[in-house]
Amino acid sequence: MTRALRTLALTTALAASSVSATALAADHHSEAMFGATEAHATLIDQARNEIGQARLQQGPEGVLITIELDGAPDSAAGWHGVHLHQIGDCSNADFTSSGGHINPSGRSHGLLNAEGPDNADLPNIYVHEDGVLRAQIFTDRVSLNGEYDAPALLDGNGSALVIHDNEDDHTTQPIGGAGARHVCGVIEAAH
Image (cartoon, rainbow, N blue to C red):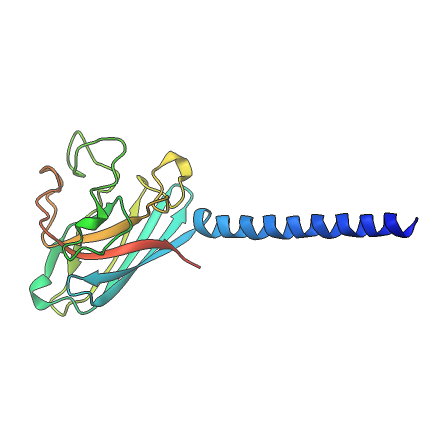
C-alpha cells in the first residue's frame, strides 16, 4: 500500500470513528431526554420555597408518582387535589404558567365523572397537621415518553405536577372545585 493510500485509509477511519462518536453522544443525549425511565420534580410553594419532591417512575403500563412534602403551612392540613399540567413552567406566582390539564383526549374532568377522567386526573392527597405528606399514586393515563400511546410528560414543552388548595370532588368542571394552585413542580428527566 502506498503512503497516499495509507493516509487516505487512516483519514477515512478517523472520520468514521468521529461520526460514530458524535452519533453515539447524540443517541445518549436523546435517550437521557426521551428514553428516561425516571423523572423528578422539585415542589415549590407560592413563596418560592422548596418544600418537597416528586419522583416519577415509568412502569410497563403506567407511571408511579411518589410525593414527599415537608413544611406545608398548618393551614394546608387536609385533602388536596393534585393534577398533571401541560407545561413544565412554575414561573408565575400563581403557577398558571403550567397551563391547563394534560388532556389531548378532550375528556371531562373527574375520576368519578361518566365523561372522564382526563389524562391529568389523580386521586386526592392528604397533608397532615405537621405539614408532612407522603403519597404514592399510579396512573396509566400518562407516560414519561409516550409509551403505550399515552401522553408524554417529558415532551417538548414538559409538564408540571400541581397541588391545589382544596380537595378535588372528581366531578365538578373544570377541576373538581380544587381551587387555586398552591404547590408546583416542573417534571424533568432524572439523570
